[in-house]
Length: 217
Image 1 (cartoon, rainbow, N blue to C red):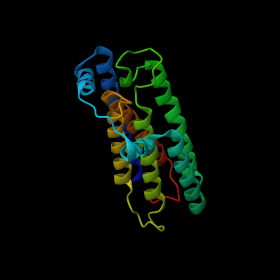
Image 2 (cartoon, rainbow, N blue to C red):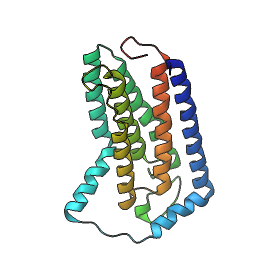
Image 3 (cartoon, rainbow, N blue to C red):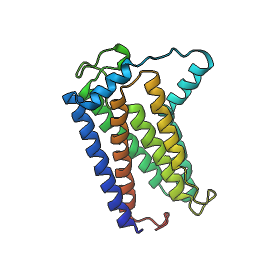
Image 4 (cartoon, helix red, strand yellow):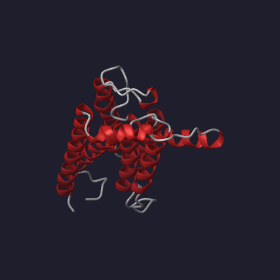
């Protein structure tokens, strides 16, 4: 598949994911079936987790922590940029962080949804629950890192090893922990994943749009 086809395909998937985000938002605004799913999960019995298990859950939850993922992503992109004599990996990572804070951050402020721990589900109340920044951040950061490693090391030390499954595992695990710890509604996580995925694919489309001698065609 050539670069143009890859770009078009990435844009199509990005648009589809963004449409999914809009439909999820519509369900929350109209208190549709997805809203009912949120509250069904909320009414389910939750067990208190203490000790070592609690520390494990917190560690998994940190996989979506912005400062942690940003540090890993920027460090890796600097190393890849230096190794392959190209600023593109670093520029793409910085653009990802700007999009994450601008689009996802602004959405959270706009909707102002309260968290399930408060046993209150209201919009425009100063909450920061929807869409989940942790979910979007995990998918964008780990997904972009996997893309950079694969794209720029195809002929390097990693020999084209795909790390997408690692990004998926990190993101799904973090989302499950968020449900267990009641830090987000289910629709928060779904909306965050859809919006984050849309941004990630848009970034990949941008990267495929401009040719580079440092990348495989």
